[in-house]
Amino acid sequence: MSRSRPSAVATREILELDPLPCWKGLLPEQYRHHIAGLVEAIIATAAAHRKQSGREPAGAAAIRSQNPLTQPARTKRSPAPLVHAASKRMREEIYRMYAIFVAAFREAAEHLKAGDQSARFPEGSFPPGLPFVKAGLVPVR
Image: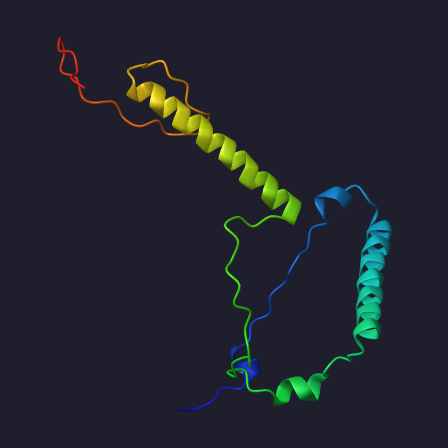
């Protein structure tokens, strides 16, 4: 198998980046200033984290010397949450709202089971199907 030179198979691509929608009205110089501010904030945060942890970056040589197929010595074994949310408080709020939804669904299902065909199910739910009734016949329960 012969190897091609990268320049023999490479193609040039042009990537055009659009401004973030929230900054679309800025002049190019203002946009660059905002982006530079974000980059500086990221660098400062990383420097503070390194100072606090006492760890320095591994460096390019250390990264290249690692085997990419090596498995971690230990892994986190906690189960994934049922719902991913931005915070624990938000996840608990989602659980609470789901419990309210389930309670409303079950209550409506009990009314339907008792024969109340006007039972109101929560928005976004799929009420259970009613038994098939042939024209002119009354369903037997």
